[in-house]
Length: 515
Image (tube, rainbow, N blue to C red; front, side):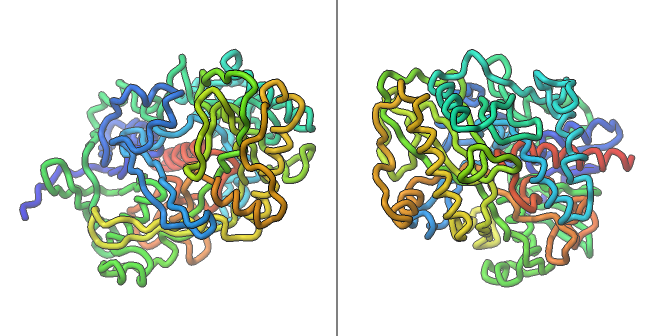
C-alpha cells in the first residue's frame, strides 16, 4: 500500500465540530503556527440546517453519524438513535440551538476533580462572556460582541409556551430572563443561537471567511483518522483515510475534538484504552487506560406528557421546544441547583413508542432530570473505521434517576393541568391514569428519548484512573490533548453546547499563553 505523506503542521485538530471550529480559529491567530483540521464530514450545504423549525427533521441525513445504542434495559429494551454531526460545525448543525451555560454549582465538581480553579464557575464566567454576543451583554454577567449570538425570543414565542410559562409562575417558579445569569430555576423562553431567524453554527461563528483565508489554516474534509501511531510517549503521526486513499500526517501537538464517542474510539483503535476491551476487539494494547470509554453520560427527556388541544396550535416560529422550566424536585418554590426540568413542546412530540397526533392538534410537555447518576460506556468492536461502536448509556439504572424521573413527570402534569393552560387543554392523552410506581416507571421507560448530550468518556481529573489532566492532556502521552465533551467529569444542568465551547476557549487561552 502506497502511503502519501502530507506536509507537517504544528497542530493537528481531529474533528471540525464545535470545539474544533473554535480551536481552529483561536489557535491560527498566531500567524507562524500552522494548524490542520481533519474532519470526516464535508462543509454544510443543506439549507434546512439554518432553518430553526426544520431541526427535528435533520436526523438521519448524510451529515449525521446516526449512531445507535445497545438495547436499554431501563427503557423497555429500546434502541436509541443518537444524532451527531458529521460536518464542519459538528452537532451545532443538528442540535436544538438552546444556549444554557449550566448552573454555577455544576462546575465545582470539575474544579474539585482536577484541583484546578480554571474549571470553576468564577473562572469560566469570563470565558462564557468572551464566547457570547448577548442582548444583555455588558451587565457583568452576559457577554458582548463575542462570536456566537445568543437570541432571547419575545414576539415569536408561541401562545402555548406563554401559557406554560404562566402556569409555572402561578405554581411558584420565579420569572427569570434567560437561563444564563447563574440562576437556572424559573420560567423563561429558551435562549437560542439564532440570528435574523437563522441558526448560527459554531462554524458560522468562528470559521468566518477571514479566518478561513488565513494561510496557516488548512481544513481537510472527507477524511477520518484511522489511528494514531506512537513513538514512546508521543504521537508520531496520524493514519488518515482520505478521499483518494490513505495519507499520513504529523504535527508537534495533536488535539482530539471528535466528541464523546469518536475521541475515545480513536484512542482505542490506536491501542490506548482498557486492555480487555482492546483484546476483544483485536487491537494490540500499547497503553492500558481502563477508564477510556467509561463514564458515559447523557440527558434524557420524557416525550411526552401529551395534550389534545382545544384549538389549532400554530406551528412554532422558533424550533418547537420553546421553554425549559428548571426546578427542584417536588418543590416549585425551591432555589439553588435544579434537579428536574419540564419543557414546552409546541408540537405533539412523543417517542417512537407512541403514535403522534397530527401537527396543530396537540402539544407536549417534556420532562427530565438534570444530573443523572447512571453511567455507561462506549467501546470499539474491531480495529477498523467500519467496525461499529458499542454504545451503552445504561439509561435509568439507578434508583436516584428513576425516582427523580417520577417527580419530573409529576411536575409536568401539575403544569399541564394548571388553569393557565385551560384555554389550550382539551384532554391529557399521555400518560393517562397511572396508579403505581411500576406503572409510572413503565410509561417513562417507553417515553424517554435522548437529549443529545453524550459526554464524560475521557474525563479530566487528578485521580490516577482518569485519562485526562487539568490541562486536557492525555496523561500517558506528552503531545496529545482531548478537547470536547468527553472530558467533562459530570453533566451540566442543561444542554452542554455552551460548556463545550467554554472548555475549548479555556484550552485555547492556555495554548496561546505559551507562545
